[in-house]
Length: 323
Image (tube, rainbow, N blue to C red):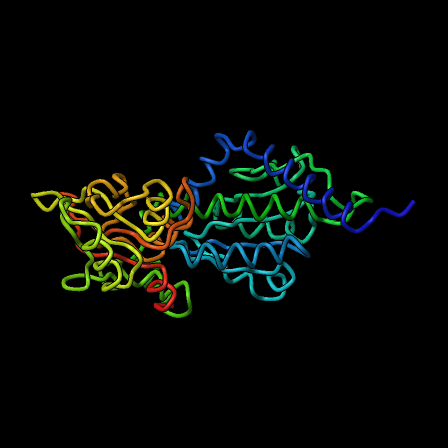
């Protein structure tokens, strides 16, 4: 009986998800050793692989380079026809092979040995020739491919990419790679533009900041929200410290609870624990705070100083326009 495409797709997701979950337990001392070798590299990381492993290798080389670890992809066939000159003292080799026995990669070992270059290998087979000769072997398997024939590289490719991402993230931390470095290396496009902006550049501040005292009447609160047109107002105590916020949604809930709300004050309406952010935070971080808020997504953040005094309000629409 032929399986439905939707059933096959769900089976692939289950197979690959289970393999990724199991990968966590395999990350140990060898991973730390690999990170040490790559972080100590004073030249380039030479990434190599054949077939689909080579395609993942190209992606990994690009990810490493864009996050502070210079890397290039070298196809083994090109290396055997003159490009082995890329290997030089101070470099580190990172070879990717599902079997760990790829002949084209094993043929490059004399170049590494002659120059004394350390080798990090990502393989699925423990005890394979590449794993045995590597200074740090990251073993992903044994792996069951999501392919019904257990032949086409599917799960193994997913695991390889995840392991590559693990290396890149760990190296970012090792090298102290900061947002400013990311911005410098990504000056164009949506990612670079978002990373280049700070909350303080986009927030509504000064006269545009919606703000009322705790003693403000319901009418004053409504007018402040309407005039500033952000769907929110901050509420401050006598010393100017943020005491809460009142939003359009708070008004709807208030009308459902009170038959005669006109005697209420801002302090009675406000939510006392609003989400806040610092003025020097990245706009990308602010969007993540708004979207991943545990109680549910919101569209505005209060920008505060160290004393929790409101400096401005950042609206999600401002972040989207900044792109």
